[in-house]
Length: 444
Image (tube, rainbow, N blue to C red):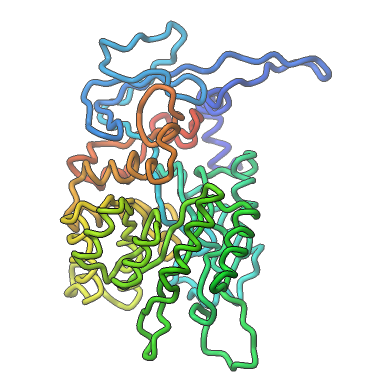
């Protein structure tokens, strides 16, 4: 008996052809030993009901894709349609740029499956990499075509190999920017609770003072696109979060990374940790649970983007027994809602990042739904997950918008996510670099 995948390929041979052709130049089938001839780029004209171009919702637009890039986009009557274009009608749908998640951990899986400490200490790296391959595919099929991974969490340099596997086509997944091991102050991170005689592997890399220069350079030398540093952690006398690096140390990290062309992301949940990160020149601050109006005003002044990771705490509260809709919101969730509101009020750039890995990969839209629930407009949320995130990554010239010359990273969903953000879950079509990676329209 044929598998479902085999039956699907037999039922929709045109999808298989599109997968092969839409990525760009292919090769003609010739006898062994014969020279192959490049084929012209596949051209498609996509006709949804509306297009979110990264800034606004546009009714009646069409998008022409040629090979790996967007050839043109605009009102149907104004866009020249190439004679060789394949016409793809998409009634009842919205087309938008491929989504971007700025805070992911592809080498982690949900904590209600396996606690973080057991993943770091007991799971072989090979097992974690195998899981990550599945996580990457699930993320891409959910419409997220670019992610920033913020730490391997005990899996060493595994993100370097995963990125290479993605770029060479060995595995399928989103465009991946990596930060290698996160950097932590000595003695502040985890796992904890072991006898002092034992040197337990950490989920990050320890460094202090001027040693931070070497560690930052080593991580960049190993391939890090970003430097991730913990500006605070639960290292206080009673286990409370306290700043772990001085302002001078954080500045040293930022200056060293900047000299090699890399930005810095700072984990900070305390107001003081966030203040130091903003003054040091961090590009993004992650979590920000204890953010105040004063700190957010400082971030806005310095152009520091806030990555709130709303979905992580929401998920962890549920693991502890909270039932949304049936139980009162836990204090942690109420506080996060208030903090996010303060960031919006201060005009801080909001970078959509979910901390996925704490919860299920492929469920990244959970973050965007919470952003809307906590007070951000659907259109601003869509912009955050596309054009704003691309700007934070310094990739606006390549991704994040529907515009000529940019990569054909595109998502088509049923309905209108500007009216109901949950429409992002009803994925109909996903393209990455012009290649169809999920097609639910032809499969229906």
